[in-house]
Image (cartoon, rainbow, N blue to C red):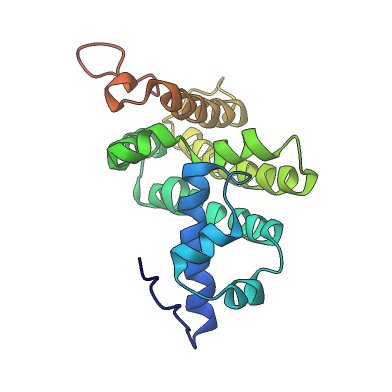
Length: 200
């Protein structure tokens, strides 16, 4: 079978973004350690030289993926959408539902990209561990900020600790998505016939 010709892009920003986009999906499917540079290069249809121009090592690619792709994903999915809600509690619940509902069926068994990397890389690479912790803290800090706003506006009981609740919300979500890697079915998010989710 004849291979497709390699794409040579003159736009370094687009080239880098394309590599990160492809790497994100390949790592989500196969894990960071299970994916090779050759696989990523083949999927991008770019030259290996183009890859190494932007990422001198596979580790450098992984670090950029955490710093840029995952941190932006957390902000876009979980934090920025809350800006439009007068009641942040309502916003958090709706965003949680929306993320699950918007996840394609074929992605359900793949789990959460952040949680996957935490489980895989935290014990083997201290730089990965620190960067992943920063993204997790970014998420928890963002939720905590909106919970404090909810408390000031009277939507959250005074005795509730916003930091602890934010940590619980994030851990609950990550645990639920982690279980889907074994359950492998959207319907297994449900715990009763009314469709109430573990998450909520």
